[in-house]
Length: 236
Image (cartoon, rainbow, N blue to C red; front, side, top):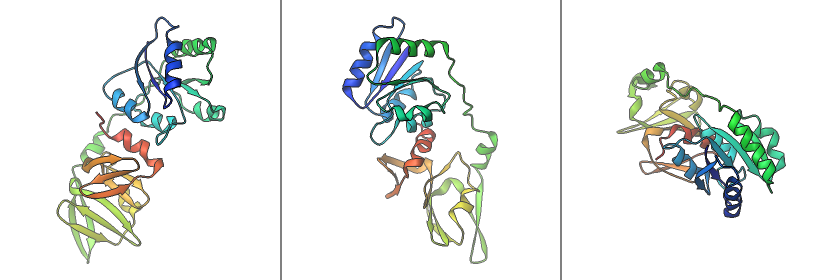
């Protein structure tokens, strides 16, 4: 079985590497100090098992799991026993190891991963989503219905009782709520990343920490929305 190690502590990764050497059919093909590096790797490579820490800066282990479209078997490796109940809410987690990890306990977890089939998650985009993303949106401005091509929208910002729709060539101020317009947008193209912002994910230029860059505008991303955003992006 091929596996990767994700832990922000180098010492923990070294120990896991040594434990893996005791299992003949377990091969470490990558190790990462943060979840974002691992996401990029998994977009190009498949593995059988992930050894995953939970407490990591910026992006927790649970955040990481939520970004995976088809997660392999995951073995949690952590110093925090309190996460056990939450961990087993995820079907892909086959075992929960508390540091320091003994060899017998490690081998038992590997055995579980070997005999457990990882869950399959349907991630295909429906034809409806694909068709909707090519359509237009009509907004009421000064008693006129204005047609806006969805693909031209950069972002939508809440401003009190109004919303500001920013497009490639023009901005529109509409008397509406962010929730109301969000319900009319295709999920394949748009995502609410903050209580005040819905963005077109195709218009993202850069991502840094808890924000994204669209054109010259920095848009905040709430922590709870980061996993969903990362799942939608095609990371290299």
